[in-house]
Image 1 (tube, rainbow, N blue to C red):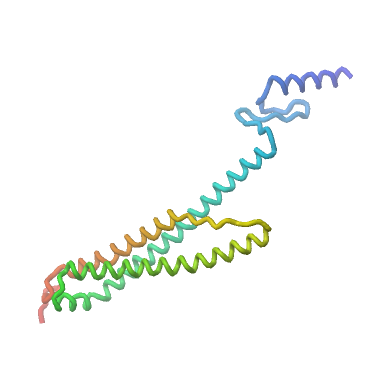
Image 2: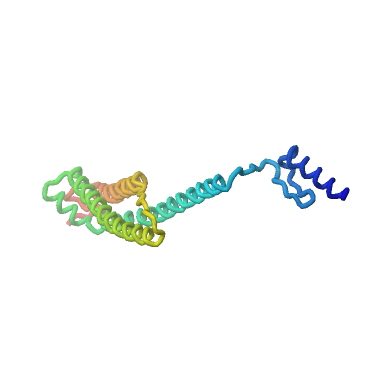
Length: 190
């Protein structure tokens, strides 16, 4: 009986005076030093939801980054190879009377148009897929599901691809047209 009174006295003292000692006293587990006591279950669920939302957003950005990186490499590689294969055509345009600046502008405009058309078509296909996923999720969960598209990230990715496409097409074209139209780049005339 004396022991039970002592345990009850220690428990009440610990609960009232020592908020964070990090040890277990007679079966009473106390929080560690520096921890925060959560007052309600609702507050704990809210905190867990915020943490989960941060992780989902981080995963989304990681997925977009990997996709954009792969896409940027593919765009640059394709445009560099296309520019190398069109050197003869571009020289013919120069021989027809176009200036170097006009030829570079033509190649840049072509590249920008291809990127914009690709972004629109890819966005349309992705939007249809997102709508069907949203509908399936809403049906499964039984509640309406909002479609959230990070437009600033999408615009940034398209802008970055546009910049990369312009650079990857204009720079090789500028380099290949660095000499006069009637002169061979290696100095042999024929």
